[in-house]
Length: 229
Image 1: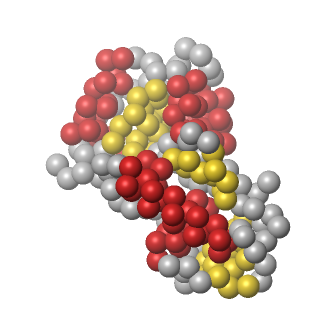
Image 2: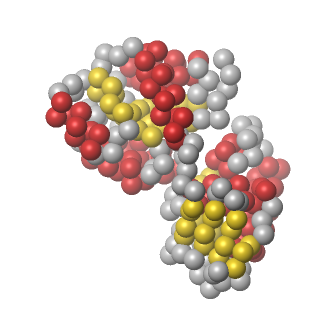
């Protein structure tokens, strides 16, 4: 099975169910992280970007819809599919209104789950055409960058790096994430970390150095974050 450049989060407290889903997804080529509690889910999305999360509502340390709300705040661009035994129309409506992208009732067919995941991921790769932070504007369609009304020339790699930081605005971005999602390298090594740091430095020189308010910040021991304050 081909390897996907896609990370999925499985939030499920039942070990047998979680391991079964993770095993099936891994066989399909996805990268999978399991969180068995709401706290673990929150910690996972703080440190890593996931294209999609599978969320069980019956976790031991939090209300399902509260966990969904927290996931939405921490991982705005992550697709969320609820997997639950709660099958009433009210539960479905509440889950979708709370921000879920899809709702699947247990027990479910694994081939159907895969189809639902693929359907969500087809739309997950369609970001906004224009990304903004303070006076910085990134036009994805025309690959133009403007700050303070002035156009900034970036290399292809610098643009892809900035786009990734903007799409994860307000969230920590690790070097491992950048290696996998921008450089498309899964086996991270120290030399690549140095290359990433050099590109971030060059990007800062162009995006931040001429301006009083800085957008790109180093998070010691973690990586980087683009924030507006």
